[in-house]
Length: 245
Image 1: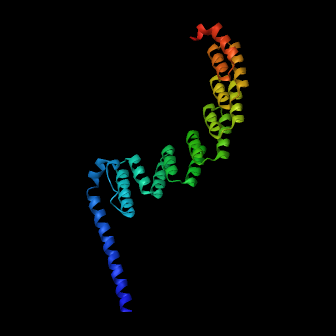
Image 2: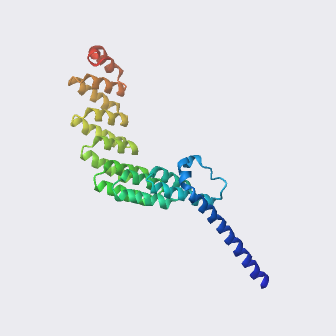
Image 3: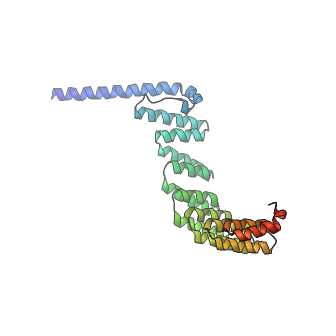
């Protein structure tokens, strides 16, 4: 019994000594942390430390960078430390002040799908369409993205609608965007949407309409994108001087 007790006491003493040694190392590094920060995280070698100590040091770097307002450096330190909790907390701070792009970056690095979805929904409610798209793209939520794209199309936000439907690979929706843009005489968006949809028929039709309206540059570009070499050559030979071809 005495031997067992002695072993327990010895083990506890050894563990306490290891903890003290680690704390002494950390205390030493905290004292010289400002000087280390000046060197930059990329220029400091922490490979001689065990994983636990290295992680603690990296978190100390992150905290100090945050205190100094160097968010990108803080994020890098937390990433290296594998501290997803800190990254999420940074995201929450950004979200509170409406910096949704930064918040989404933090949640993405923290692999926090729940926060990304909630932030995306909040962005939608506040009309921050670009940020909502970014959040939903990060989690590859095709259903939500499609709803966002449809909403953008209704509101004639063609650039956002094209971005969404391109991301989800929905060529039918891209063609719909092109059709509506064409009806509203937004020919640039129409050409972009039809090109991404790979719809040579619609591109040629766009070229025909542009040609009838005397928009020779648009007509030429549309025919080229459609692979309609005959009509592209026709425009080039007859109206090339007017569009610097």
